[in-house]
Structures are given as structure tokens and as C-alpha cells.
Amino acid sequence: MKYHIINKYLIILSFVCTFIQCSKSDEKEETKGYLQEESNIPDYDNDPIYSKANPKNLPTYWDIFVESAALYGVDLSDITDIEFISEDLSGNTAGRAIGSCHDYVKIQVDETTFRNLTTGEQIFLMYHELGHDVFNASHDGGGLMAPNVRSIEYTLFQREVEDFFTGVDYVEWTDEECEIIRELLKTETQ
Ligand SMILES: [Zn+2]
Image (cartoon, rainbow, N blue to C red; front, top):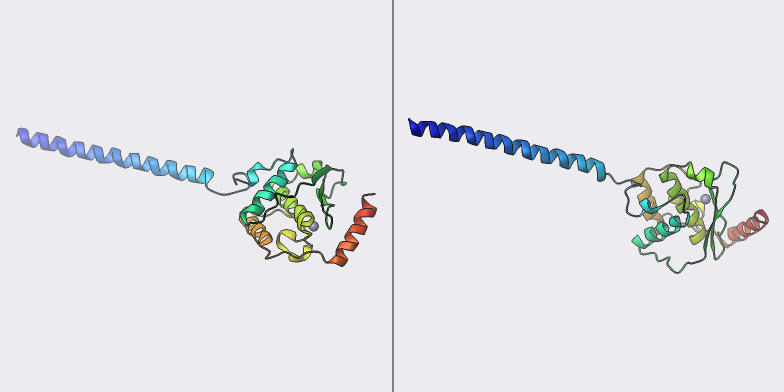
């Protein structure tokens, strides 16, 4: 009789233990799922490079451009003549590359318009303009250098950045085009 009671208690006890274990591991799974949702979806805001961009500190866009290039073995560390100029570009334009076909990198930025863009648009715009100035890349390559700066989904943007730095969609201005650009910039910035 005594033995029977102990046995009964053991059975109940083992049930209780199993139940606790179950709920414990359930809790773990839930926490894991929650954390995954919070931090594992890559986006501009949690990307190790793009998250360093600061619209109130424009040279940070040069820093992240250099870092992105390095990911694909392109070394831009010897370029030191870089300037971001704050300029009123009358509402429609947030930024302009005025160092195309020149040895220097010079980007005009209408800071009011620029700050109203989304993070993705800001980074897209800066990479596009720096693409013009650093590589003399024309619009013909498409992708990152397609003429209309647009809002772009993070993963797609990553692919366009990769295609740009690995030369897949990258077409330089011709010498003739550079002549024209230099003339245009001369008259426009005088
Ligand atoms: Zn352009």
C-alpha cells in the first residue's frame, strides 16, 4: 500500500516536471523568435556600414562609401580631396556631383531636401553622386547609376552596390562626354 502511494506521487511528480520543462522550452523559443524579429532582418538602420551614415555629418557618407568599396576589394583610401558643399538647389534636387571628370570629389547637397529623404534614399543618392565623382561613372550602366535616384529596398540596394563595385553595371563617361561635362560645370559653378 505504502509502495503504491509513493509510486503514485512519483508519477504525478514526473508529470509536473515534464510540464515545467515544456513551458520553459516554449518560453525560450518565443524569446528567440521575438529577438530574431527584432534584430535579424537586415536593413539600412542595422547594417554595420550604413548605420554609420549621419545626415547631419555629410562626410560620414564618404566613410561608408569607402567601406562598401573595400568589401569588394576596391581601395579608395588614397583619395583625400573630398568636399561636401551645402547649397540651396531650389527644392527638387538633394545632391549633385560637381567633381565628375575632375581629380577631386565635390558633392553639393541641399541639406533641407536631403534630410527629408528616407535613410535608403539618402544613401542611394550619395552612392550615386560619389559614383559619378570618384569613378566618372555615367548613367549608362544603370543600377546604382540609373539616372533617377529612388527609394530602394535594402537587399536590392546591396546587390546594386555589389554590381557597381565589381564592375557589372558600370560605364565611364567617354572623353568627349567629359569635355562637355567640364564645360557645363565651368559655366554653372562660376
Ligand atoms: Zn546621376
